[in-house]
Length: 421
Image 1 (cartoon, rainbow, N blue to C red):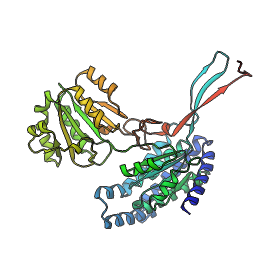
Image 2 (cartoon, rainbow, N blue to C red):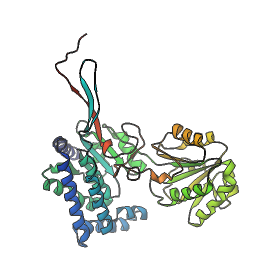
Image 3 (cartoon, rainbow, N blue to C red):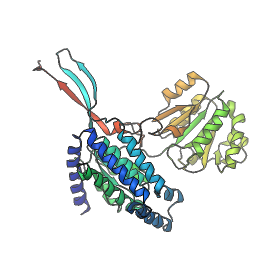
Image 4 (tube, one colour):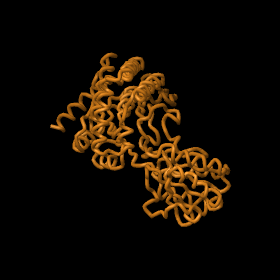
């Protein structure tokens, strides 16, 4: 029955997507406004259905021994719900990408040729722990003219049921099809396998969570998948770098939030500045950071532990930092090429030429010069809300905003031209 039920739900979502794709911006923005008002009301009422559902989810997660960081991601309160409604209003003010016309030009035969943005269709969003993703994914899909099927984790089941109910009510209030938002009840991996196998009904799958989930989706999918296995983010401190800047950037990138995909995981230090910079990391050790260094790094920072081969290329998502002293700029590039995950890479340097080489030669969805890796985020890069960060290159690379939930089709204006030869 899982397969039959999911096929029927996906067919309804596809019909909703066809209707939604033709709707003007004003209709979609009315949904976002209605949902924002509903969330405001939920936040203002301590006994609201949403907060009560979330409290039950949190209590069950705690009793089952779920990791404290995941419990924190799961938890909603009035402030977090209001932040969700504020994000909806911000998205409503954003330009609608659907229908934008790009690159119209007149061909020698008189045809006027260009492209226009259209929705993808039906998006399957598969994610863990964070109920705010339910609202973000729905809102981004809606604004870009797509229907969305939402398969959240079982730990947020009650919260997601309440949120999708609010989404569907907002759609109905604005006169749009409720099946533009469909909740896939979390059971096991069977429904995920079926969902990502619905070729012809699902246009794109976006898994957002741990590496095991993303690999499972990718291995079983018969539809395109946006991949983001892990965020192994490096920072290279170059010869002659401003060490005060480097010190500040390392602290922010590593310790501001350790459990996110754009947190720093490995620091590479040019041997010319290693003796001056690495002892400064002792200050961060006092803040709870564990450093795992190579032999030269440990000699300069005795409190560091000796790194193992598994520490290179590892996403710790904890107060742990891998540290390596490198003999040259090219050695840093080689390390990143071998161990990076195409997510985020940064250089601290005063040298313009090496900064440009780093930007040009490092393969990652976001490359930064003299800035924290934490800036690889849709909001920080000016996209507003994001659906996730893609570390694959088709069809998006990096944070995915509204534009990345559309594709381009060719449009041609003629005056009776026919093709000869």
